[in-house]
Length: 420
Image 1 (cartoon, rainbow, N blue to C red):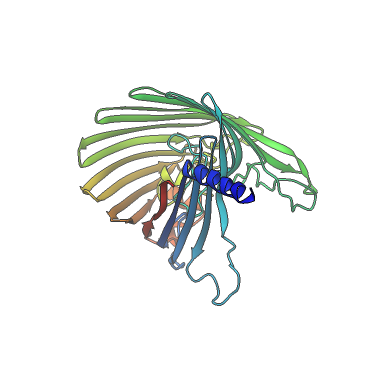
Image 2: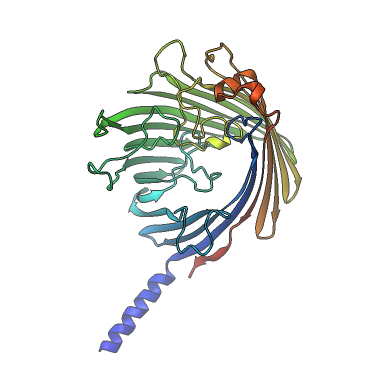
């Protein structure tokens, strides 16, 4: 009887596993970078930087009718940063990048719980930030609904630091800082409807940032609300996309973002693009905060690959008016070249009255091989007088050349993929 019971258990487990879909894949992504003015103006007396970082990920997914489970382990290593024969990882970068479960509730509803990537539309406000080796994730709970071409997500997050000496508090940096924007609380509602050639979405986002009193004790939150829409139209060779967002709250009022992008497929091998983006900034003559910040978007994608704006910088500043043109060339079935030129101005004047910031040129070559891909990039900033003032580097003390070059190998092996 006992043998029959064990046999039945093994048979049931085998049947259950056979009905499940299990995937196991990875990523190996080393990237070398030459930095001579990346992120900010480099002084003439400073040396260029060079380094190699590697992102490795191991991803496992398991799916049955009732739920999905996903786990992604990640490490980001800089070559040579770990002293040899050290018995531990000096940079402490090994982490669980994603760990979530999505439970099917029926009738188009599901709930997704855990550490996950939140990425919507063109990733202007919420994105995965995949360019950064570490990426971006959120610990959140979502209620999801999808029917046909309509979907909606309602998300909640509540962050704590158990090690804080005064109790369970979030050590977020607050809103009036230059980057990070770690929140204490988050609530958002995202809705999207798609048609044949057009789609539109609406995002309502509220973030609460930890406040501290004069004794550095937790003292409530500062809240900021972001409300806006993303619209996308494509028909034939022509496409247009638009963003419109407002921000208001305890520390900001009347901030806005407006963006418009056009694309045109001139041929099977050439796609042209043009667009502009306007983000409000602070008027230096008043104490009011009216600067828009795109919070959790993939900012590297939008305002120049050299990351002079909104990548851990340019918060509560003069805003930005960005005009850009691009051409994407398909060189062969496996290779392509992106050429993009961006011109930058402040939305508000600098203290000197200057607005012009400069022009950036971005080049990216991509080549796919059997099982892996290679990407090469070069960018150069042609700074105007305002850029030196904005970045706090005297023009006569700055290097004549502000440039950045990189090379990246991407290998994504599929160890297991399909129904077992």
